[in-house]
Every structure is written in C-alpha cells, then in structure tokens.
Length: 560
Image (cartoon, rainbow, N blue to C red; front, side, top):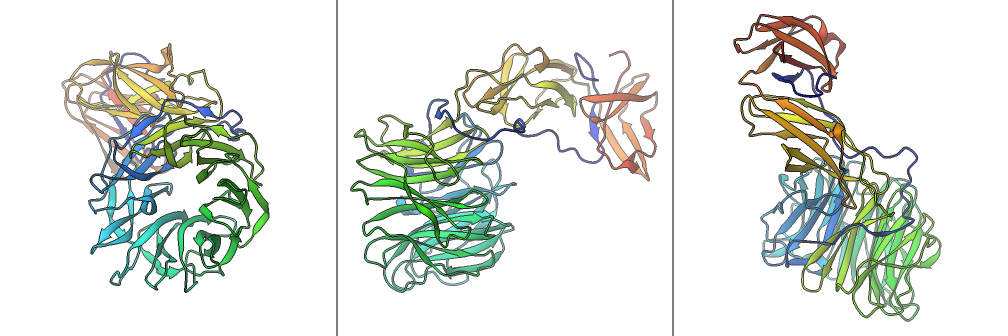
C-alpha cells in the first residue's frame, strides 16, 4: 500500500480512464428487501418551505432520492436531492422557468433512467396548460431544453391535466387527459431517451363521450409494453379501465378492470418485472377503502379477486404502490383516528396482505403520499393542507448499529491546492449507508454519497489529515475508525503530464529543483509500486499502452 501515513506525493495521473469506486455500499448477495419490521428511521424533514402545491414525486437514483414539486407562490418546478436518511444532498433548484401549475390534477412525475432524471409536468404555453418533459442531471440541472409532449407540432386548443410518466426500453411514455374532442380522453406521447419524438398525441382511450381522467402508466417488462389505467365515467358511475401501448405507439383494446356500481378513485399501476399491481380506493364496503388487484402482463385482465388492504372504516384514499424487489409497499391517506395521516401495509407479489395496517404519521394532517424504495428503506413524502411537504425515511427493520468503517483510504490528483480522497464503501445490512462525512483536520467539510471527494482550496506544501465517517438511513454514524484516516502533503507547484508515443507512456513534469524523482505505477490508486527513478524531468514506460488497462502514476521526491 503506497499511501498509508504521511507522504509528499507530486501528482497522480490516469492513462486511459478511471471511473472510480462511486456509489453506495454493495448489497449483501442473498439479501431480499422484505419489510418485516416497518418503522420510521429518522425525523420528518420539511421540503419546499410552506408553498408546495399538491404532491411531490420522488425517485431513487442508486445513491440519493430526487424530489420534484410545484412551488405554490412562484408557480415554478422545483427539485432537491436527499440522502436516504432524509438529509438534503443539494440545495433547492429551479430546473425550468416556465410558469407551472400544481393543483391536484397537475402534480409532476419524476423517474430515473440509470444516467439522469426525467420529469413530466404541466406548464403554461400560450395561456393554456400543456405537458412538458425535461431531463435533469443528478443535481437537478436541466440537460438541454424543455420538450413539449402535448399538442406537438400543432396549436394547443385546450388545457391538459393529470400528467404521468413511465420509462422502459429506452423510451418514455407520457400520458395525460384533455378535452380536445369535447370530453376528456387519455392521450399519450412516446419520446426516446435522447428526447426524440417517436409518436405523439395518440389516444389511449377512445370513448367519444363522458370523461376519462387521472391516468397512471407503468412499463411492463414481461409484456414489453406500457400499461395505462385511468378513471372512466362512460358507465354513469366511475370505473377503472386500461389499455397498453408499445414504444412505437401501437395500442391494444381498452378494457374495464374495476366496476363496483359506486365511485372508484385514485388508480395507480406498477410492475414487479413479471406481473403488474393495481391499487385504488372505492366505497363498495360503505366506507372508502384501499384495494389491490394483480394484473396480467399487459393489463388486459385481472388475476384473481380484488383484495381489500385497508381497514379504515372512515376514509382511505390516494394509495401509492411501490415494488421493493421482493414485495409491495402500499401507502395511503387514512382518517380512521379523526386526523389525516399516512398509513402503510405490505403485500406479496400475488397481493396477499402480509401484515396489519401500520400508522406512519400521527396528527400531522398529511395527504397525497408518494414514495420510492432504495436498497433497504423507503423515502415517503406527503403534503399538509397548509402546503407544507414532509419527507421521511421508512425502514424495513430496526437499526441500532452504525455502518462499518470506511477502509483503504487513498489520495490522488494531488497538486499544490487540490487533492482527491477515495475509500472503499462501508456496509450496513439493516438500513443501508446513506452518505459519508468528510473531515479535514477534524472539521466537517462535506457530505457525499460517492466514495471519493475532490477537495479544493488547499495551501501549498501543507500536511492535511482526512477522516471519513459513514452515516446510515437511521442517522447512526461510524466512530473509532483508525482505518478511516489518511494524511497527505500538498506539493509546491509540481504538475504531471502524459504523452503517448506508440505503445510507450512518456511522463514529464515541471522542474522543482529536486535531485531525483521516484516513479510509481498501479492499476489501483491505493496500491502503487515503484517502477523506477530518474534525475531527469521525464520517464519512459515502454509498451504499457498495449494491455489496454487503466493505470495510475505518481512521482515523488526520495526521502519522503
């Protein structure tokens, strides 16, 4: 191990490319995300101030949760990232300056495609509410410009409502409701991951009369298609209908899924990878309760009977369904205790209820729940009637143990004023690692969910001590970790450069008046071996480019 205590390293250089060890801790090989002991992990965090319009949408990107909402005061789309324990990871950003509309039927939808976010929302265009799509990076900055998803290539004639979106097979399906043909119908646009229109403004529902609204869409891996469900009043009383479309816009035949002869509300559909789950609320049992049904791979029929999930006996609505990889987590608004709170229950892939209704919030006046699942816990959001939005981690097990210590610390890219510190991921098998705290000379300077940190603003020829501490979703922090400390010394002004000459790597550096220089090389910045020394300002490493590996080099002065 080259870097283990105090050393004066000139610089470190990657010949080809190094992606680094970035991200959360690896998951235990046999781990299955079952929530046997659901519970609040950390206190609720208020997000968006006191002006969040309706509900927030949340998505997990593998390291943090991203959240979007409409600001009630400024009528703008807002974004903020949060670690798994609910601690803010970024400041609030405004991705788009378009005048945006919130309200119950215009809340935004956020998804993560593996490299960046996509958000669909309603914004004013020519005085009418239209549906837009935008791509956002991990910090909520827009990539490119807004993409109009409704009335594309034609003048808009009516407002569009209820935007919803899903991602699958490198395509986005954006659905909404509008009344361009007289009554509200469900429309869809398919846009690929580069923002290119595939097919736009085609009808998912074809009923000429009565209203279709409140669509929900998911990608079906088993059916290789998008499945859309919606509320439909063609039979006098509201029912739930469905249809499917492929990524090219080919649609199936719409079918009725739920009809009780009484009002049905708030449908949502999601997938497990092999089947689909549908949730909604209705009053077949005299009170508004939450129900679940399993659907076929393309949503064309139900598998088995409707399953009642809630036992409110008062009012339960706005269900939000999340698949963890092993079971469903279902959140909803419930007024059984004469206050508006969020409740939760678990279901297996077949819809069998696995536990009792569990109260999540108490006397908080919350409504419109949203949720996403990380590796070990949910992030749940909900809004108060006073336009305050709250976010909180909801875990699957009790955790009173901090994560393991970060190990194998290393440093590279050391100059006179900058350095990059790296470490191996910590482990936490109860609630997962949320983020890392970076201490320089015993002062907290940063928090990150990556396993490296670029430090700047250092002083020339100065020794620094770095400590890394891991924090889990229950906000427990590692302590007493000797292996999580490293020292480095910045250089005066020495820089390392690289040129390629055929298959040789020729390194050169600036003259610092030293008598000799030692050259180290390795495929890992934390494990470097000396390959030579020279009194010159260059070094030739022959035939090293042939093996197509990523190499790290450092040069230092003998005696350190």
